[in-house]
Image 1 (cartoon, rainbow, N blue to C red):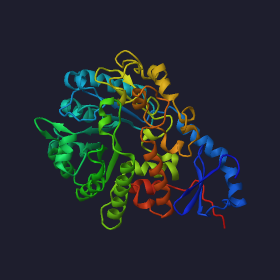
Image 2: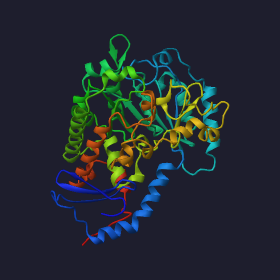
Image 3: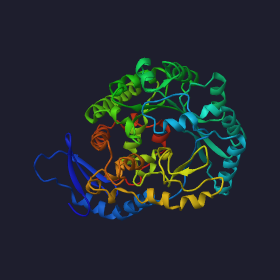
Amino acid sequence: MSGGLTVWKNNKNDIVLDPDNLFWVITPNQGDHKVFISEKVINFYKNVRNKLSAEIKDFRFSRDLTAIYIDPTDKCNANCAYCYIPNQIRKNGHSMSWEELDFVLRKIKKHFEGKKRKQVIIFHASEPLLVKGIIFKAIKEYSRVFKFGLQTNAILLEKEDVIFLKKYHVGVGISLDSFSSSVNNRLRPAGQGAGNFSHAVRAIEWFDGYKGLNVITTVTKLNVRDLPGMVRFMHSKKVPCVLLNPMRFTHSGSLRLKPDEKLLAKYFIKAVDTAIALSKNSKHRIIVGNFANTILAIIAPLARRLMCDISPCGGARCFFTITAKGEMIPCGEFIGIKGFSGGNIFKTSITKAMVSKPFKNIRDRFVEKIRECNVCDFRNICGAPCPAELHSFGNMYQKSVFCNFYKEIIKYAFKMIVEDKVKYLLRDESSGMLKFAYNFNPA
């Protein structure tokens, strides 16, 4: 071996990897013998190493904004057990007026004046549809300026709303934690003993295979075994993409719901296998979005969409959140955490927020500064999320809470690449856009 190459065993193969730039080679497992890599491969690696390293460095440390999250209200009509937003804020928080939201959107528009690509605006936070009127007005009035997204528990979503969202090509995320109404409603209670299950399922059926729909499942110890069934259930509803996101622990009270990492890896992998089988044997394709991001991190690192699994993370770099009161914070996970506001958008420019000390502190947190991560082969695939969560544990400069889970999933991603199953793991449009930048034939 030479340069920054490392070797590790993965099932029946040896993986040769440069963790810094994600150059990799897969060879048949050579047992206890020294791994042999041909001179042609070594020379090829030497020729592309500097270029790959420069590309990854630019991707990791550039500050081009790709999305801005707007929390138009602090309030919520549910009471999820793992919510990162403090209960007091959800019950008694602020809601934007139309004048305030319009001011924010005009300021964002001005900041990006002259840019060819539409800026992405995502309505997020507690439950944005509590101020549905101003959100839909914003989507209608600014549809030529911005590309919009919406994250919702769907409790307030009506059929005519779905028609509106589809008309304006809004990306929609619906939160649903299980195919079992009792499990889901235990995790996502709303009202007196009820939850969002029936509302979410009804809305998903109204969307009827809409390509802009994602269903987001937050994984806890109560629903970890439901993941394969969740994929089957969503496939039956023609959902194109599910995200099976391990819960965050930004507020320590949620630690009681932490799933066992071995169980999490086991059932997550079963869910991926289920998605592959369903996509392979039916007309409808379904993917696990966060696993697709792991695959992309290996085969096309610069094509990754989810910015939480990159180091430094996308917070305060590729995106930031504007709270209902106008505070600009690195991401929604920092709601309720003091000391991370880059300024208030009603008084401060976006440019000043991006160079503020709180934003810089998040961008300065990257894997090379974290013990264990700095010598991990997977450091630029996993990214050691999440700084807000780890700050809540007293020190953001530590490895991820789900470190072992991420390692198992990355190893499984390499296995899927070897087995030529990538075509079942990515969105159709993603697969169609990928082209070889380096196509090496060792023969």
